[in-house]
Length: 243
Length: 243
Image 1 (cartoon, rainbow over the protein chains, first blue to last red):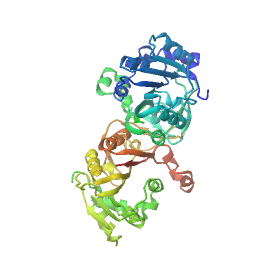
Image 2 (image 1 turned 90 degrees about the vertical axis):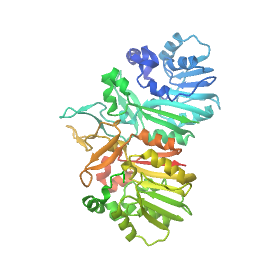
Image 3 (image 1 turned 135 degrees about the horizontal axis):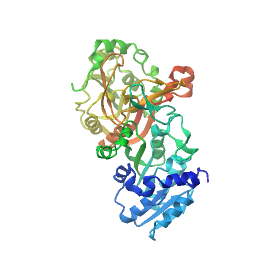
Image 4 (image 1 turned 135 degrees about the vertical axis):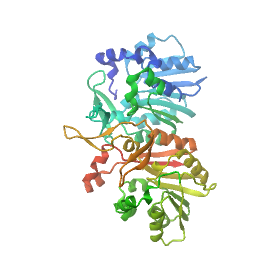
């Protein structure tokens, strides 16, 4: 395994399993409505989910007409939980290092990935492999942590003397690993600029069709006032591309 | 005129004319080498420059084989200076409000714009007009101030207690006018997220071919140590798209 498998760290997994998005699935993820809006009609399609976690999207895709779904994840614990929650022969979960895939040629008609690709070091390799595995015209919809969110040396809000909250951006152009303490110590994410994310997709052969720097909607902010700060700087980057 | 014409403000113009990029042209603009790398072979092409200023790019394009160049700008003073510096019947300078263009259909084979489109309110209208005016396969290369640079309520570096310089990002999702005091008081720029800039291009019919969040190269930083801070957060956004 070339990618850090933090999800099989017992402390991390324990904390992760308590997050709303782990317990209640897609509807508990604030960015899901925006991501869902980018997902095309799935009827009859063969789908791959890169970093499927508990398999929430795999099951949702089958409920929305997908012919079959392959969910890949590096974490045995995640896949075991996914299998427990699934009784559908149209869904296959498989353990895989996303940096070392062999997906065949034109095997899938849609690819999805939620908050997984910022752990990948060799993203160019993964995108080349994925491009080969998709049929022409297929869409690829994914989210990653936004580079504005991953860049800073100290990734937490600053409170100015005027009480104004700002995000202390620095190191934006310094691409590479970022060690954070999300849920446990020493989680390693790969920071890439927004330009790099897009250019890697383009060079792998994809056409960019939509780029969304996610922010809560007015309705979401009304229901969850604590999300308002997400409008000051984007936390998630949502991208739709076409093979 | 629907766009603020700050370049004809005498105080602004006086200060602008003293900038290195005004006096020495393209080579004095640190982002020019990156922007130039995105410009295709211009031989025999009909070119439009949106916000041509002193006409540096128009003259460069003719020196690099362009058949003819139309330079548009809202500022009479800029155009007068451009005309003074030009003796080339292949270049036409014309005063125009970029929000109210009528460029015809398939009139140009390449479009260029340097640091002008962040003044434009109706960017969707301009992009639709430009798409119509370009021949199929034509490239459009442009720069704007990066949204990370335009967003903040207080767009200046913060110095932390540890001496670390950070860029106090906020208001990123709040699109619309930003009043700044660059060279003179009350210059109004339009803040748009990076996603919005790209999605407007895509919706107008363009294909994104390259996105660059400009930073000085190692060689540039060695020659100009004062530019090093530009690596902490991007100031310019360079985009190449294809009709």
